[in-house]
Length: 447
Image (tube, rainbow, N blue to C red; front, top):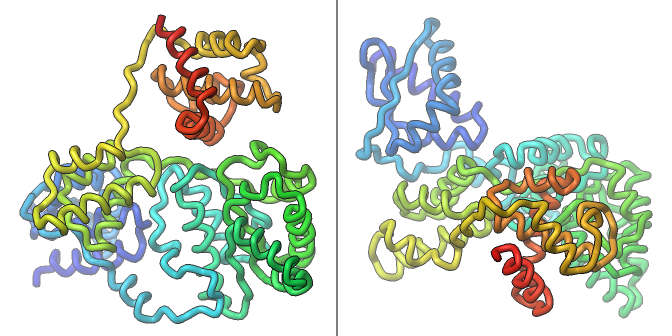
């Protein structure tokens, strides 16, 4: 073995342990191809991996090589489709963890969720880092914490990762993970069976309480009252509380102000849809974990076409892999396009003559309200609906990003805008009056 062979093998091990998951993906794709003119040659299976590795982690690779060698080493990245590492094997660290994982006494936790298998990108780095700090210092750092964002963005993954990390490193701590719906049903059952006291003791004696989807508690006054007292008991005793929600706490209706105040008193962080590079890293990891055999050009098509959330991305991967297995043929790009019609919505044609102000004006006229009401903070149901429709049509009919629409809607954040779009999409399927309003305003704009 030459010196450069040895240096690369040592560097590969160090990089596997030091780099974040999103960058480790590219290390897994590398095949060492010796040296050329004193440089180490590294091969990638496609231009996508080569280009992203050059942009995201080339400096870390060369720095690690140089530290090990004691002198500077340059690298040459090449593309070689004969590279056999299209789907990388799990790292030895992950395999070791799987072997040594023990059964937890905190049975509400799902052990598939961990910080190690959460791909963090620009959309989620704040929430991811906050969750790790909470897990390392339960009851001390960021208590309470609310993680909010749209469906399929990783809220449950982070919430359960917190619980699993604490369970592994502080096994004596009592942890409960529960959805708000299960919390509600359990409370109702405790009243019916005269076990209300046992319910209170169970939830007020924990060290860590993790509640998923607290938006489910809207309009449920009695369970809100119970959660209020549970919250106070745990917070006063420095017990960790982490909650998730599908929107900012200010967007929740029919939640008591005193409960909202409790939720806001700690750290509130949002999760946004992942960028293309993060989606690609997640897709590669899912294929590795589930042994899906999909070519790189198919993965690239999926990640370019599906930008909604991770759940839709996983669904597309499962659909194609299942088709391949059932019919016994590999997935081509044409097959992928044919079978993902239900996942991929073609973008609407943008009309450069339509502005957000025009959309607001037409919507205000339709609902017989003032234009400034739509940009304001009124909680009148009619105005809220008009505001949601204005945002939805701005997203559909203009080229502005969600963040840019938010700025023009009196500084509303990306997550709020995304919630409005999702809300109208949902109502269009179930509410004829909303469907008529949207169609009428859109037709008026097109005229």
